[in-house]
Length: 172
Image (tube, rainbow, N blue to C red; front, top):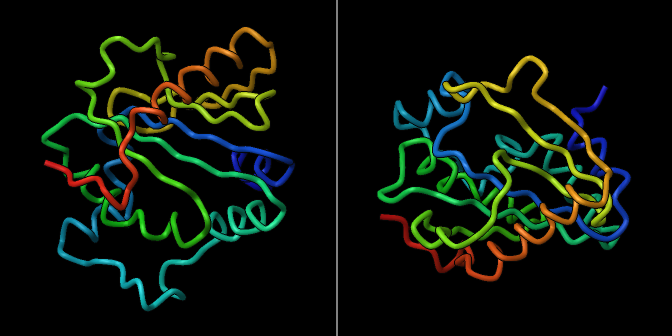
């Protein structure tokens, strides 16, 4: 069975947006642990990092779906965010657009309390994490009620409007 975000992306027709707001996720992630030990992904060795998520994004983009990801980050950035920053070339290679917004620039924005995806402006997928960054046991919640979806769409667009494209963002 496909992970929920990949499954929803496979059904998307126009758009998929993702807002990430944490400074760390799953600190026991093998990729992050390897990165901490100095291992880096090689952009020229696509076979070493290209995987199922990249295929799903590429398939969606090829169908005409616009896939955008925005990350709200504290500065100076955490080691985990630096890891994400270093690996973002993989998202871009798959066809995602990625932007970064320093947390200090969000104080006047109304944001949901957790990370989310919105697909085709009609369905939201919330991700609930534990305090140490693990996906909670019941950590995925779909919503298609117009109020919560609109809240997420509006929040994402407000962040996207202010955020810095990956190619221009220089983390502190």
